[in-house]
Image 1: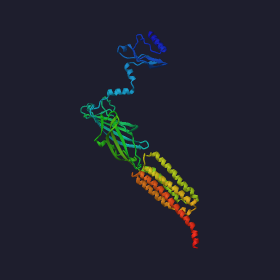
Image 2 (image 1 turned 90 degrees about the vertical axis):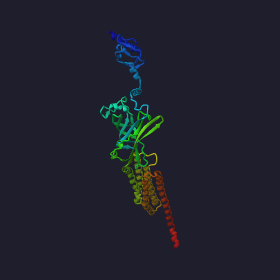
Image 3 (image 1 turned 90 degrees about the horizontal axis):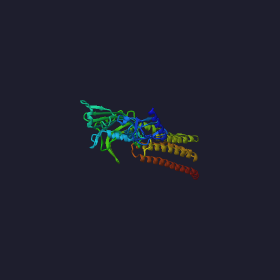
Length: 467
C-alpha cells in the first residue's frame, strides 16, 4: 500500500503546484536533473531537460519512464537531443555520415555517359506549354569499388535500385526540364560488372515544359527538349558526356505513329551552365518534329474559307427592294460567325509574341468579308439612294469578278507566306491591297456615276440644239 500512497501524494502535488516533485519514489525511481515537465489543464510541455529513470537505468541495465495517465516522459537524453533536431537537419546529418564519396573524390570530375531514348510520344499541350513522352535514360560510369559486388566467376551482378549510398555511389541524374510532378519512374535498373563499370537504366513517364514557336502554325516545326543533370554534384564533381553507343538513343520508329507530328531529326549534347554560384554539367536531348498541317488547317481554316465564299455569294442575289434585307443580313451573319470561329481558334492555339501565319490568314479573311459588306452597302446606296438601279446592277456584276480576283490574290499571297517569308510584310501588303483597291474602286465608280448623270442632264439640251 505504501507505493500506492506515494503515487497518490505525487498526483495531488502535481495538480496543486503544477510541477513534478523532486523527491524520489521510495525504492522505485530516482530523478535526474534535466527535463522537468509542467502540467496545465491536462496538457504537458517541457520546461526543462529532465527524465525519470528507475534504479535499473541508474545501474546501466536498461531504460524506462515513469508514466501517468496524462503524462509520458522521454527515456534518454539522446532521444531528447534527436527530437530537438529538425527533419532537414537530421537528413543532412545522416547523409553526411553514410554517403560514399565519389570515385575521384578530391580529383578530376567523374565522367558519366548518358543516352536518352524516346519510346513513345504521347502528345503536346500548346496552351500549357507541355509535352509528354515515355523516355528511357541510360547512364554509365566507372567506380572500381563496385567490382567486389560481383561474385567470383561472373561478369556482372544486378544491384537493387534502392541500394544505400553508403554501399555504392550514384551521380543522382534527374530531369530538370519537367513540369511540376512531371516525372513518374516506371523502372530503375542497376548493374555492375567485374571491371568496375556501373550501368543504370531508368524508364519514366515524362511531362516536360517547353517554349513552342507558333509563328508559322500550322506549318511549324517544334524542338522538344529534355534536360538532365546531377541533383547532388556540381561541375567540378560530375561531368556528363554523350555515350558513343547510339543504338540506345534517339526515337523509336513507332514512337510517332498516329500522331499529328513526324520526326525531322534528333540530337544529344552536353554543355556547361554557370548561373552565379550554380555551376552544372547538363545533358540535352532534342527531338525536332514537323507538324502534319492537314488536320489543323482543315479544322481551323476551312470554316473561314466557307464563310468567305458565303460573303461573296451576296453579289449573286437579286438587286431589288425585297432582297435588301437578305443581302445585308448575309454579310453581317458571315462577319459575326467569322469572329466566333477566330475566337474559338485562339482558345486552341494561343497567339505568339509576334506576327504569325494564322494572324495573317485570319486578318486577310476578315478584311475580305468586311470589304464585301461595305461594297454591298455601296451598291444598295447606288440603287435606292441615287435611284439608279441599272448602274447598281452594272456595279454588282463587276463585283462578281473583281472581288473574286482580289480575294484569290490575297489568299495566294497568304499561302506564299506559309513558307516563313516575311509574314509581317505580307500582312501589311494584304491590308493595304484590300482597302486601297476597295476605296479606289468606289471612288472610280462614283466618278463614273457623276459623269453619267451629267451626260444625262446635258442630253436634252444637246438634242434641242441639234434640232
